[in-house]
Length: 156
Image 1 (cartoon, rainbow, N blue to C red):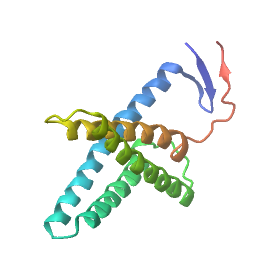
Image 2 (image 1 turned 135 degrees about the horizontal axis):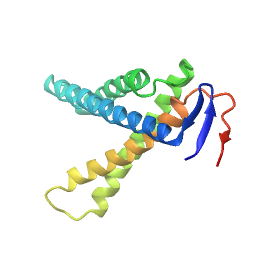
Image 3 (image 1 turned 90 degrees about the horizontal axis):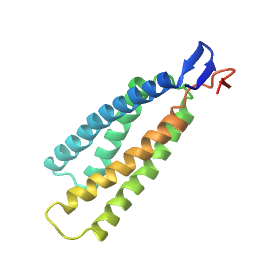
Image 4 (image 1 turned 135 degrees about the vertical axis):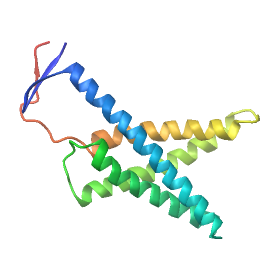
């Protein structure tokens, strides 16, 4: 088992994996809630008679804003708070992910055969790709942990 020395002593690789799994579970739960915020506000805005594209833009912003604050508070709790630069990195990441998501969905609809669930399958694949990208970049860039002092491997 590989050990890593940090401020609090020695942390095992198993402990680090456990922390990663806990973050991933929280990320999925927060993401599910934010998807409800996005889809629920989209539906309500459509019911109010708002133009469909404006409704989608507003619902995306509401879901994304909710994701930022909940992920910061509950998922990536050991992240260094970098203020506006952190929020800007989050906005940039979600802008890129939006286009990746839409592009993946379009690609899947192009390559999938026509069948009853093609739109659902395309949506699921696009969400999966976007979610994977978001988790990795949120963890390593936007909400990265404070660098431990003396974080050099101990042992082999």
